[in-house]
Length: 306
Image 1: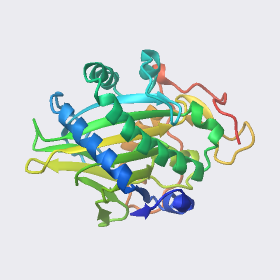
Image 2 (image 1 turned 60 degrees about the vertical axis):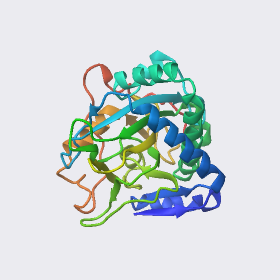
Image 3 (image 1 turned 90 degrees about the vertical axis):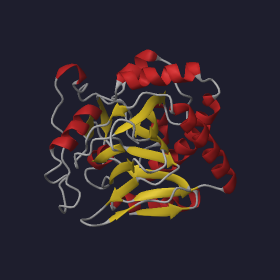
Image 4 (image 1 turned 90 degrees about the horizontal axis):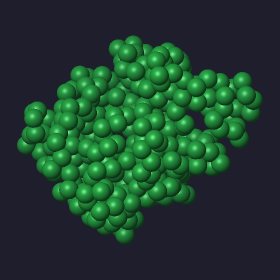
């Protein structure tokens, strides 16, 4: 369900793992672990004062709450951007982005802790992206949205998020407590270790690769009697509402019409059908075209193949 990797030398395993819908845990060195754990503890304390929000129910209809905000960067391995126009262009709740900007403004000491976690997340994403066929020349055009979360039941009996695949190419996670569960087959579930950066294949990777890679289905639940849990998740995506050359594609005709919102809605609509993780093999399909102001930009490539 996930495999422990000790660093770049093991990154060649990524292709095999993701083809099976398996996550990869990049184990921290002792020095990295000390920095990551201290930063998570400091940020969790600062999140305590945020108002709780409902999370979407997921395929299992779990309703829960959490305290969170998000930040973003244009490009992989680049600083957080304060550009409001860029933040508004990304899929995700705009209010969460505004909370992130306000949080940084009101807690300037938190910037160093967020950068510590971002460095660990970005390093794992870069290693994984290269292994699934994303050219390094694309990295400046990729987008990364970072969700910072404190899971603690405040208005409901539990905090968390329902079972789902991430609507991203890849997601990377650091966390400090139990509560995350990964699924693969009926009756098969595991809670991964918390001594590394976990990378999961997302449903957009599944579509872009035409079914080569399977997404990992997962959920988070923290009960009222459990210790609060901190997580920071990075969601890596192609430029939204753009035509993206297919994995290994060399012609303009092999284009994936990337629309993050349409993919996420399609994931949830088909939750009881062949997207159901335990139901057996599923054909690779495209999401229904989006409607309204977020419609896909059309076939023009946002990135060059190769």
